[in-house]
Image (tube, rainbow, N blue to C red; front, side, top):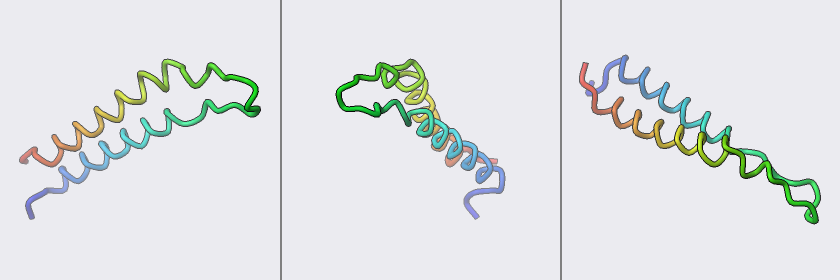
Amino acid sequence: MPLTRRNYILLAVGFAVIVLGFVLMTGGGSDSPEEFNYAMFSWRRITLAPILVIGGFAFEIYAILKRF
């Protein structure tokens, strides 16, 4: 097998980080179209979530290429 059990565990951790990033991006909509909701531009959605997603993908690459 080209990947060991440890590689699969690292892949699962990376996938969980990616999912967490996408979950943090959700929400921020307004109930009424006449009202603008500034919560959609929060630090969590604009900065933290994309960093987690990109970091998760980078970790996935590391998990695949790491040899144990």
